[in-house]
Structures are given as C-alpha cells and as structure tokens.
Image (cartoon, rainbow, N blue to C red; front, top):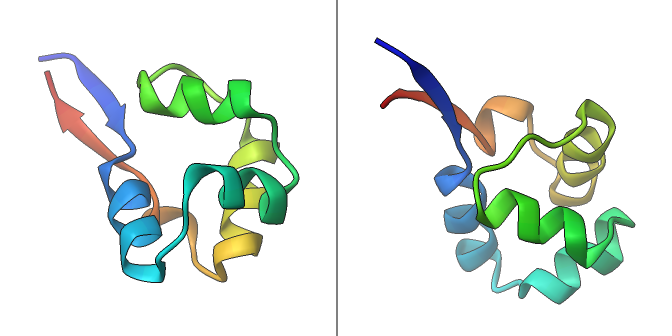
Length: 69
C-alpha cells in the first residue's frame, strides 16, 4: 500500500496557535508558494520544514505524518 505525507497536524497547530498562513510565511521566512504546496500535499524541502518547526517551536513529527493512501 502506498504511503503519503499529510500536513494535517501543521494546520491544526496553526489553528491552536491562532496563526494565519500569512503569519506562518512571515515567521518561518517561507514563500506563499511553499505554503500552497503544503496545502496541496506536494513535496516540500527539508529546509522549509525545519524553518516551520523553528517558527512554531516544535518537532517535525508535530507538523506531519505518513498515511496510507
């Protein structure tokens, strides 16, 4: 069975912190295009994921998970 990455944990964390996607861009120093890729479940660089973790003060497993398709 194929597995894919889900960023649902990231979206929940943003809601819990009261952040908008634009604030994520600002604090993580990432482009709106990167956030759009995340929203579509597309591949994103490790650098972008680490910037998000730094901005949210969390670990990588707090923002993504693998799921069966």
